Figure 1 (cartoon, rainbow, N blue to C red):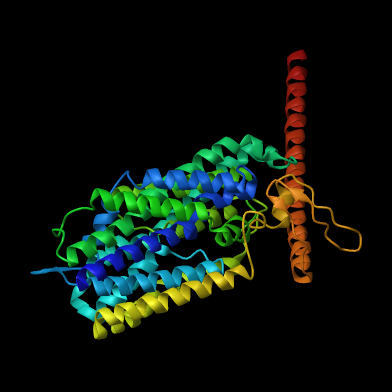
Figure 2: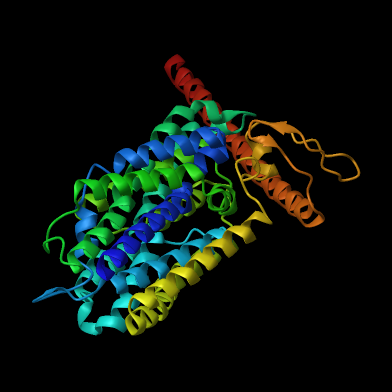
Length: 455
């Protein structure tokens, strides 16, 4: 009876983690098309939810990595118990919700790995961890994937922006790349479902193997696949608006051609890693692509302070989740079922606190992308002479009045964008002068040739 109760609690908690993964990582696919106006916010998250659902059924290679590639198997099965898996999930969920509250696009995947590793170290010892699998399937991809995606996005942006530069100078240049952005962001959502839903499948499969109800080395059962697909889809539809704000407007000003390049690079990297069984962080890949695209567009500026915050989040994700998982494991291991129940109550209180705290500073589809970004997408924001910002209806809702600090940020951002536009104008003028010089030289050469022929 006890093992059945604990396994049931683990499955429920794993599906809740899958739900948080969905709304935490919605921004990976939909931040840039929302920022450029290619998709309305609610339409974007609905599309992402549907494609996450579909993607979850496409592969189980990553699930096998989680269920058999991170935790070692002994003579009697895996060297971890359902109680420890429960503790590891608490570590992952606590870090996921904390970073979501602050709009920090951290890695749900690394939070999961950290929680499981911390719990396993406390409850089963160092021998329970497959460090070779952690290094080859988690650590190396974590370092290589965002760098690769950023480099690809940098090159792709250089090419795409050189070809389509004239469209971004128009008031509403998004139409030229709207359908391309929709296609590329849809591919990311599909890839996210393919990669991230499988991680929860792997956790549930690991739990069933640890409980002795499933043979080691086997893949996830059909009901596990369906449940995880639905959980991540519902979470995605809930919308991670705080992180959408960070990726869509906090890292760099995203323009249509640039957004398309970033999304395509993200999707290609995630799909390739899923095929190879790498438990990749889609958040890190998406962030790397956005940064790379920002560096690739001349005149664009990357907000390095935000990049630094994200990098610190990446650095602390795995150890922080491991510490929380280890603390939860101490209770679960020492008190058995009672310890698991205490963990569950404490976890529930933390979840309620986070959602209560977030309600005091609500971020949703109407204000996820700030005023300057709405203005950039072609909708007017009227600013009175005395500096008061008048709320105006937009495609994403009514912009609320701004605080003095927000007004200062708006003015600073407008100044930065004006500088970028001035740089674009200067470059266009230089190109016009170069073309005029080339034409003059060509005419002079033809005239010289005519004189030679006359002689």
